[in-house]
Length: 343
Image 1: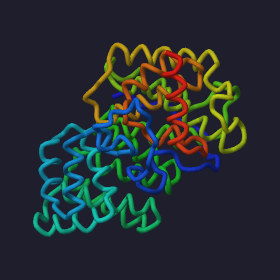
Image 2: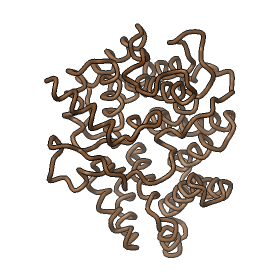
Image 3: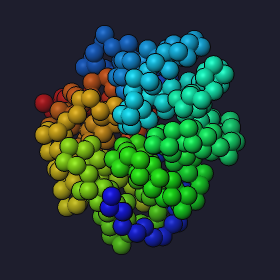
């Protein structure tokens, strides 16, 4: 497996959390979606972290009632589909009583790697919200990793902790462990990009290590990999940092961030990839679609944005619409209305 190019300069800019590590449960936020949303979708009016995974939705509902057996069955049948497993565990771990139910599951099956992983990620979620000792969460992740050495999901928990609490050396070391187990890990790459975007700015408007790394990862991945959209994610995360530190306007459409030659090339390549390779089955595909729609809206390309909004439907995601300090409900609805109105 090729290694990433060396990354230097570990200083960080003081910013608000990115979407992956912001506190709170996004599924409880109302979006105010308009009539273009499918009214039959039970979550048409909410940021739903399941992202349309019907089986996950059912298991989450059961877990809220203490019926952890549904989560057990879901994770058993997920197998080694690592992106899907990571998505499902992190969503289940968001439930307020996930820690208690995971411990009950462990009492019934002390050697269950799935139970240990759900417990670990629930402790991570609590730590990110300031309700748990991060070191205790780390220990839970290490326990889960020992029970399932090939599974990158416990390392995803450690990466979430490193992204928020750890030095960059810890972040890079943890990412290397995760990538060793799943080179194309979608969530892991997004966390890495969000953190590296906080390094000091490069020599020019389109010169920054996070852009280089994202393009490198996209180029190294197979042609059909969703990591093709990672450079667009890098631009959104870098905008978050620039706007939060006063180096870019608070209105993303009022900045030239997406107008430079590198940005235009990345947007064109990512949109073309989506047209050719769209993966309806990828568990985190709506995160990529929202990043693409955000970028196209900010770049003043309503036709491409409209096609993406049609595909997103009711599955809006808080990030990047919340960047830098905006109400994501209003930002998403406004951008979608503008794009669809231009059709």
